[in-house]
Length: 159
Length: 111
Image (tube, rainbow over all chains, first blue to last red; front, side, top):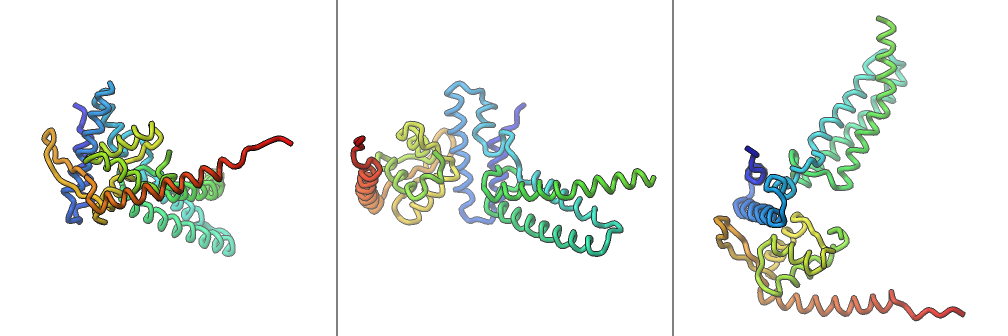
């Protein structure tokens, strides 16, 4: 049985907005909007399950910020791991400084995006800030990958 | 057309569709799409904040009823809202006419 995406979305929305006094009104209005949208799509010939996927935000395979959060942190953590070896002190300092700034900027940007969208698990990454996060993550990966690969090769040779 | 392109005009657009009569949120979005001949396909995240803001400003009022077993909020213009709509519409018509005159420019003639 296909799970009811509207119910799931509305339940999650209620959880996120539970601190607001008007949460019931917001959730009921959104639920009515989504049901109306689905009925409109079904009336145009779309299957009900497909209509739900189109209507409910974040349920049509969109990029999820939490995935980018994990990949960005992993990339930066990879960068840190690459400097925990016996390099020259000067090189070590440059790497630590660069990666610390990158890590701080990435964390602040991700936090800002998530706070603004309020969609940690279901939101779409559509804002310019969101793509800035992605760019930082990709850049961190690109910068750190050669060092990680070189270290791995050195370890293979040593063993 | 993206919501960003309509910033500054959303209030007038919403007031305009509600000037024809009370509508719920989804119907407002549909009315914007239909009356613009599909040009204004605005997401709910753009339209609902405008509705709520206009209500807080006293230009719209909302009522809750039940439709097909669901609670439904319907918006309508208040008296100040109708006045604001007429004033905004007049200002827009003057602005659009002036823009059109400038953009159209004088007739071009090869010399």
